[in-house]
Amino acid sequence: MQEWVIHIMNQYGYVGIALLIAIENLFPPIPSELILTFGGFMTTYTSMNIWIVTLSATIGSVAGAIVLYGVGRLLPAEKMDRFIGKWGHVLGLKKGDVERADNWFNRRGASTVFFCRFIPLVRSLISIPAGMARMRRGRFLLYTILGSAIWNVVLVLLGAFAGAGWERVSQSMNLYTYIALAVMAVGGVGFVVWISKKRKNQK
Picture 1 (cartoon, rainbow, N blue to C red):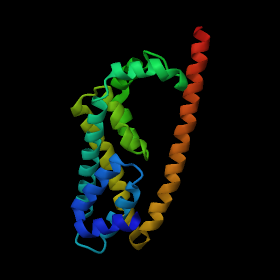
Picture 2: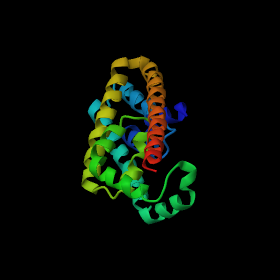
Picture 3: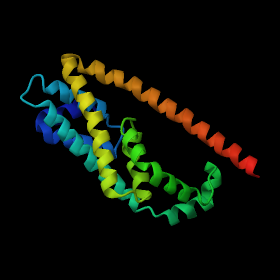
Picture 4: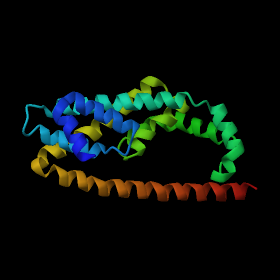
């Protein structure tokens, strides 16, 4: 995977970076950390510019996010409600949860889209619930661009500062990924337990 990513970036430069980041949004197992830190390193031995690398990566991020947002808009709440009505008991969900989630997303969706751009894996998938909740396109794009740009510029700069040691930065980001996902998993379990207790108390 790493050799293929590096080959594409060396071969196609800015366009390759934008394309790889767009693909990374659609297929999260492709590591953006590798793409961005190596992109930063490339600016130290080629004529590539840090800010154009960051811009290319951000264009790719937004392009991928728009595709997933469109997928979310194709999943109407009515179908999700029917699915939950049939299979929701397996996940501890019930009818009406989709509507409540949409209402919550409409209230806090902007900050959710922004902050989730800093969480590996989730940073890509958050675009789908944004589309399902019919979040306003302009609002979605604004916070996607802001969050993506910050994430991209930080990793590109780290790669540039690390120089030939860019791989150590990329590997260090793996630890951040594991910690972030572990925290999310614990938070998700805690949320399910809280919902279950709340429903029991209501009964």
